[in-house]
Image 1 (cartoon, rainbow, N blue to C red):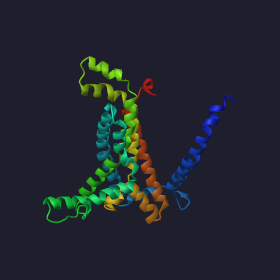
Image 2 (cartoon, rainbow, N blue to C red):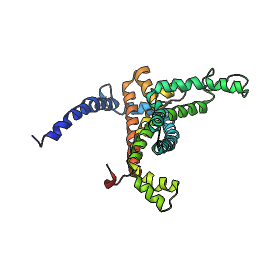
Image 3 (cartoon, helix red, strand yellow):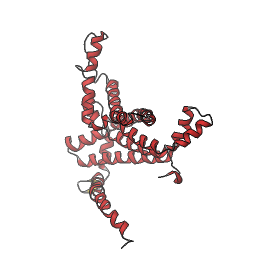
Image 4 (cartoon, rainbow, N blue to C red):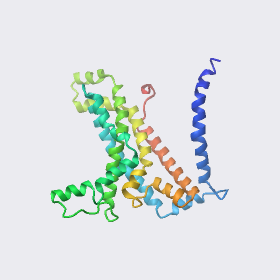
Length: 280
């Protein structure tokens, strides 16, 4: 009985995983490679041949490349500030984490109220006399402003996810290491770069994997701010599934998102390899 106990304890989690992840995943995978009941790659061919697929793919990659590095720097800065506070630490942490409690769509609508023609930004610029009248910021002629608004909304909304993980990681680093480096004359930057960052690798690995995967799944913020002017992989999946009623191509797009996420996860695991003895 004692030998079976670990397996019995794992049984509920395994059953949950099989029922709510592996079974739906297998259905989507089968849908992606079948067309009218016949195994085929036609869904992938239709997906790749569609005029929006290329722009959706590269918009998704570009957004992830623009958002994640900025969030990493901000999250490291915020986590360092929170970790060094002696008083008010919890209050500052809660303030930094407020955007976490806001849904993707709500965050998109908040930033839409800033950038739309009758929004706060136009009112502010007109009030300062910089503009004579409100201008259309989120039109098809100003694609780069839409992209910038999406980047700002994503950075504001999701940086706290990385910060919370990094704060927890910094809390596990013994203070003696930093104090020893200080005794040997290391500057603040040298202590951060040569002591904190290497010991923060497990947390950095987790934070980056989580954030990169979520960046590939960006949807509601893009729809709220850009509509159909900035297609991304998730919005195209939605279009094929519900607007075009083509489940097979939607499943193929979902498999592309999964493949890209797995590839970047493996890349991060490789680049931020944590030695076995340093793993928790």
